[in-house]
Amino acid sequence: MGSFLGVVSDRYKEDLPIWDKSVIGGPPGGETSRSRCEYCGTKLRWFELIPILSFFLQKGRCLTCGRKLSFRYPLIEIATGLVFVFVPVGLKNIYLVEPIPYTSSFIWILVFSFIFLASLIDFRLRIIPDEIVVALTILGIFATAIQPFSATEGSFLGNYGLIFGIRGNVWLNHFSAALIAAIFFALIILVTKGKGMGGGDVKLAAAMGLIFGWPDILLIVILSFVIGSLFGIAAIALKREKLKSLVPFGPFLFVSSILVFFFGNEILRFYFGLFGL
Ligand SMILES: [Zn+2]
Image (cartoon, rainbow, N blue to C red; front, side, top):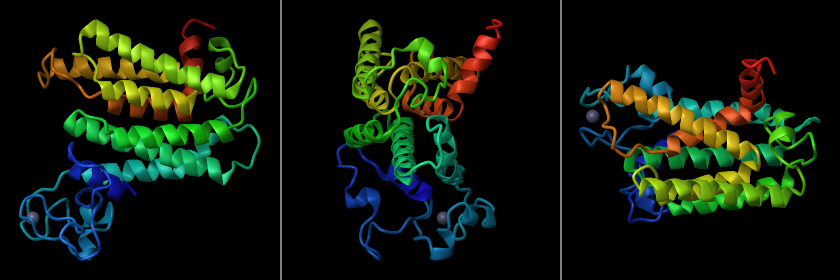
């Protein structure tokens, strides 16, 4: 899956649907199926296509031309692998009773795969494909329908979910979260006159609001701005970016959603602990 996400994020073009065979790969043996070396164009043989392993065995170089390959691919593969393995563990934060249903693990693995793919494409092209937002919205409806929801269950923030939100009806909660996230990002676009965010960020944030619900989406948005600012300051200090240049926001939303999913409760406990609360 990680290898597939890397390929799709690499081949995606703005004017093609994401399921086009030039993006997801055509029939076996076809012109669009096999990955090629980005430098010499040689079709990769089967042993050059084993995720993570091939990269390290080949010492990060193409076997044909010897050029250095991007570290992006093994990194994406490792990140995806970690998400897949640990999602069921993270779900313990909202399911207080065991065992964790397979359906939930399956849906959340898809959720993070799509958010990750959106952030990879956003990083490369500064766009978030609508197809991914639609897929995430559908997953959000499923996630809302099957998740536990009570005063103490259903929020990744643990008991802090009670301080920041009124936990009433599960659908009202998740749809309000989507609406609040969309309005918040739309306001930023209005205030910055489109220099800070794009329409893709509004749609992605809304879909994530539907998936995570309130108040979890609040912490995701706050964290993404904190991480984004730190990254921006570092980039400007290192003179990699100018103050005005558009930084893709999708990757920050992805990282924050991972942090909230796995450590939402711990992050808030640490934060309030700073004030002795
Ligand atoms: Zn090569």
